[in-house]
Image (cartoon, rainbow, N blue to C red):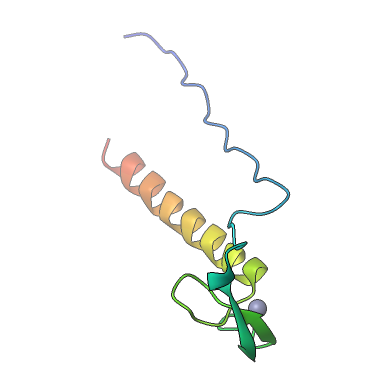
Amino acid sequence: MSKRSRPRLQRPELPPSGLLDWHSSDHWSTNPAPCRYCGHMTNLRDSRKHPAHKTCAEDAVRQWVQEESEKYQNERLTDT
Ligand SMILES: [Zn+2]
């Protein structure tokens, strides 16, 4: 059995404009409402039409991805 080490996967850097593309008018409302994440007022809406800042939504996505990745890593390591 050889002892080859697998190359570590590099996660790509996010573009400076952020993870999400909210240029569509679907993400804008003329009525300000409290952001679902931080509670500060915003005219922006997420993909489900809930009030949310783009940066707050991106932070939530990043956190979700990290948590799911960790779960996957943990399950994969314990199954071997
Ligand atoms: Zn917010």
